[in-house]
Every structure is written in structure tokens, then in C-alpha cells.
Image (cartoon, rainbow, N blue to C red; front, side, top):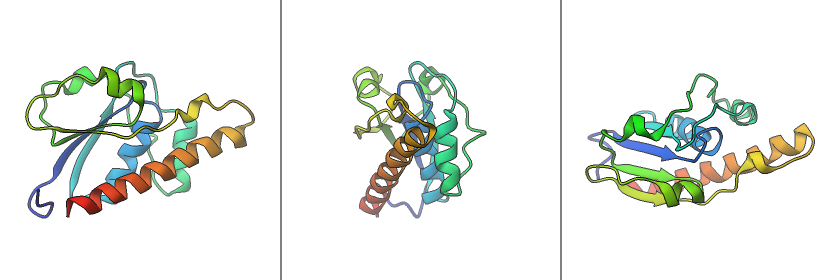
Length: 143
């Protein structure tokens, strides 16, 4: 697909839509503002994790106003790509209409790390950096 002629429609899924998918949404908006229309959702949405907000703020990206949405909100929309960023979401992801290409990237849940605030934030930063690398590689492969 030629990215210069139309925006890609991308849905990023993670079970709770609180961290990995939220960070990936913010990163993709920053990396490809004129090339991608991106949203995120989950099967069991909660709220955007404060550590995810802090990790993204470090990168100069504000995701504090993003919402945690249920994937049913997007079942009637067509997407070019549906990207799952956790194994549970990959297993339970419904079939989306149209020509959506499904991509799965397995990232550990940064919220599972217990300990001091610094330890927790480091786990989110590590996942954020991994997501950024994968998104950059993926975008490069589309050109």
C-alpha cells in the first residue's frame, strides 16, 4: 500500500487497553501523524495506567486524554491493520470486517511488575521502547 496517498486505518488491541495498546497508539500517532489513523481497544477495558502516561510523557507524548475503549466499539469499522500487543488479545481477537491484516507482537504486561515506583516505571519504559522499535520497523517495511 502506498502510504503517500491514503492514511492507514490501524486498530491496536490489548486485553485491558490500559498500557501496551495505549502506548502503541500514542507512539504511532507521533511516528506517522500524516500516514496513520490509529485507535486502540481491549476486551476488558479499564483506564489508562498512570505509569504508561508517565513513560510516554518522558518521550514527549501525552496520552493522558486517551480513553480505554471496548473493542466492540470498532467491530463495524474497517481497518487496514489490526495489531495485537499481548498474547491474550491475540487469542481472543474477533475477526474484523474487510481486508484487515492481523499482526501480533508479544509484549509482557508492564503492570505485572511489582516493587518500588522506579521498578514499575522502568518496566513500562522497557515495553514502550520495544513498541517504538517494532512500530518503526513496521512503518519502514510499508514504504
